[in-house]
Length: 154
Image (cartoon, rainbow, N blue to C red; front, side):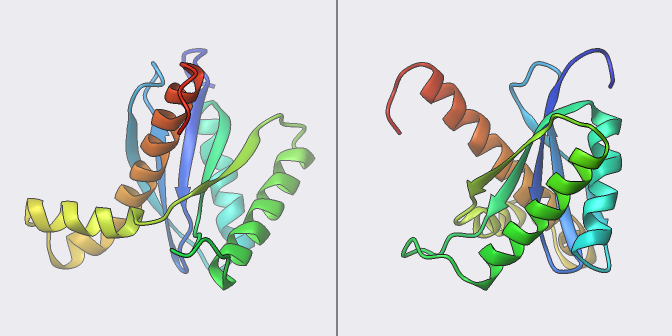
């Protein structure tokens, strides 16, 4: 754990590329940190485990792809399977890290809008969009958590 501060890690699970973000030491802002390239869910979970230790993470927010009509599809089931694998690895290591599913609707679309507005194109865009999506998911989660802590319904 770095600096004794527990942080939250955000994940935008992809097919081959998975975006990762982490909170700043104050827990105020989310920042994209990397894109994990993997060969499958188990490989991705093993790589994420290393990041949990690297950043001193106390909680994981996993983007949950809920359809616009509120139903769950194949992508959601894949995320649930990944969550189960990651929780198993955390348990094996004797960790006490919560893995939370968080509705990620429109996070990828918003990431593409940001990329368009900033003029990021081509290979650079492909490398950053997953990380930016993870950052958006994590920031939305933290913002919602703060609002709920203030007693405001969302």
